[in-house]
Image 1 (cartoon, rainbow, N blue to C red):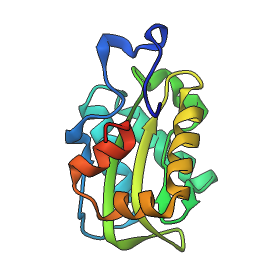
Image 2 (spheres, rainbow, N blue to C red):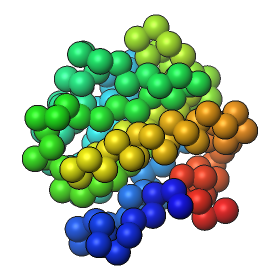
Image 3 (cartoon, rainbow, N blue to C red):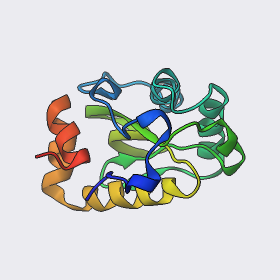
Image 4 (cartoon, one colour):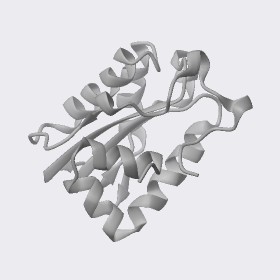
Length: 155
């Protein structure tokens, strides 16, 4: 199941991986750096990460683009920022008109923080979802409830 953890992998303090308030839809186009700051700040505000993680997300982008294809970007912090992660979590922003992501058009940005190696499973699962053209379209065009349902498999 998507984004469901085994009991022994439960996030600290019972945190869910995604909260509806961490989904912003129909966002206006903005520069890539500002989008990373906003999605990172959602992770901070929700208690998943400490503030330095946002800078680590920007640092990752300088060394390696988080553009994944099919209109998706998955910004996340560099390895050195692992200590700033308190719990695994994601935050989502959608841009129906698209934004420029280092020369690529992006419609869905999902900021990721993963404890230990959990970020790899999150990256893989999200990327797999976006391979499904119908799911990708629904993530791009859907409301917060639709996106929440797709990403938590509560449909």
